[in-house]
Amino acid sequence: MRWYRAAMSATTTAPPEHLDVLIVGAGLSGIGAACRLRMDLPSKSFALLESRDASGGTWDLFRYPGIRSDSDMFTLGYRFRPWTQPKAIADGPSILDYIRETAREHGVDQRIRYGLKVVRAQWSTPDARWTVEARRTETGESVRLTCSFLLTCTGYYRYDEGYTPHFEGRERFAGEIVHPQHWPEDLDYAGKRVVVIGSGATAVTLLPAMTDAAEHVTMLQRSPSYVMALPSSDPVADALRRRLPARLAYGIVRWKNVLATTAFYTLSQRAPRMIRRLIRKGATRMLPEGYDVDTHFNPRYDPWDQRVCFVPDGDLFRAIRHGHASIVTDTIETFTETGIKLSSGDELPADVIVTATGLNVLALGGISLAVDGEEVAIHETVGYKGMMISGVPNYALMLGYTNASWTLKCDLVSEYVCRLLAHLDATGNDIAMPLAPDPSEPTEPFLDLAAGYILRSLDQLPRQGARTPWRLNQNYPRDVLLLRRGRVQDEGIRFSRSSDDVRAAAAGPPASAAEPQSAVAAPA
Image 1: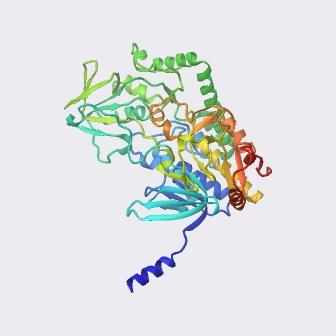
Image 2: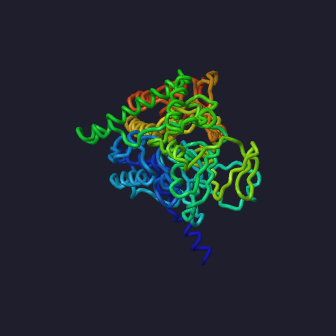
Image 3: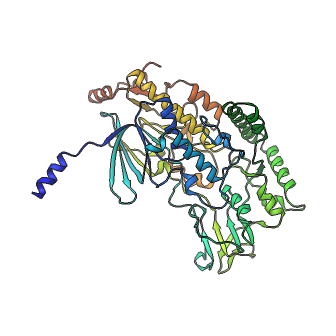
């Protein structure tokens, strides 16, 4: 009878749960996308799948001392929910509270399903839906769901491991070695000598934060980064909030900061020598007299070839000025029992070494995609409007700006996805297929940032085209026109009904490559 019960169970298994939209990731962008769905398309069914056991993404994962935003909260915050706290450059716990409070206000916290890691998604054109396979992180059990639209909000780096290069002699070091992505709760560095390896945003955050307890903190960098001081509070925002309603004041300050950031980036690209001099002058003014600025704060590259590091109220410079911290620019020959021997022959004594050496990029959160049985090779696709990829229907991904706040782009993508879904409903279509540009047109890497974590991972990302809509704009005002105000239908996307596609496939290939584009539905 056992075989009979098993057979009966197999034949009566219910089909997978179906949702209109499935959001992968419950971090800053995933929560924002879910809130936007609730506001703009309240009748749509959706859920968020989160591989960890808590929401908040990066802001819940990272627990190292001093963790904070390096973007102002008037642009890192959601467009639809004003940031009301006094500090414009906020600490990690405050940002996490903001994300979770937003989720509760919109009822999104009830739609999150924790402990489910999405590993694969397969699109079926006849069914016009994705079949998504997830695994329970505790048991390994496989869970399947289907959805009409898939939105991945997984960020771009691996949550389970950070990037650490090989260090000769690492096993010899008698002290503790930690990576900021996996900060031990019980790490005691009080009264100890700390060496932080790295020169990026994490390193410049750790340096001043650890000086409160450590005997001395040294930032060991192979080459310097651009570092600029910003006030932790925004006096313009403070003044406006005293006189205007919170939402109006927030919108004005948000656009003020967007335009200032855009102008700074544009000027950095057009007049890099001038911006280099301004940044150097600011650092010189905040450092001790006679400090070797050109060795420790004068990068070989131009501003914004890599991200500029912003430090609130100049805390990094203050720590150096007061003698609690120092910067060494050199390369590592080997770890020793008591510290690090440098290529110059000097040795840095250390009790604790922090490897703030960066991230490992993981495109799409490690999810493999297949369309009608064919595996999708992401590096062979072309991005469409910086949020969809050619040949992959009813799918979007969240990737924020490299030169501005992450949320600015993610907010726009969320709005655009809602516009796209509304367009499908209004036209009676159920498939939105991004198209690649003509093969004769040139393409280039999706991201042009020269940071190591990007250069190591270009083969995991799609390409971008030379013109709109395949060109990735690192420019918020342009994207407002393209994604919020622009047409949903253009030459880069084809809308259709699943039944039409099935009939077309049965009839054979079209007479010319141009025919699929000419079959696009009329604009809404």
